[in-house]
Length: 152
Ligand SMILES: [Zn+2]
Image (cartoon, rainbow, N blue to C red; front, top):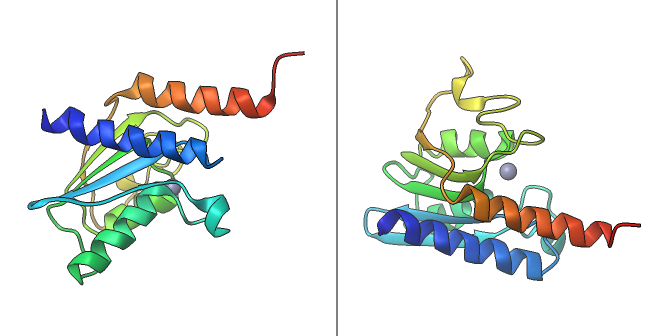
């Protein structure tokens, strides 16, 4: 199934990010012709606070297509995008956003800045949330539990 397979691939990227010591979030950008880019978080590796999975796939897909917009493309990401990524999604004119777990702490779609509902939003994608949410949330929980160490 198209739906599940792209989110499965995003989850694979999230797992790979965790293995690199990065917060486990993964993303896949899909164009009309197929997958354009896949990525997981690389903020630590690149020493770049903007190197979220969504930013990386948007940059890679735009570079691959030689254009600044991704009209008609779909973005799959395992966690609710933050305000920065949501703004980039709007700027890129991405058609559909599929995301996994909610992020009450740092999310900018259903929480916080609610970028797409803001009067300044120039473009809002169709949004489908809760896709493989439990698997996405479990990865994040395991990652942060491990970093905190065993309970004392
Ligand atoms: Zn982000």
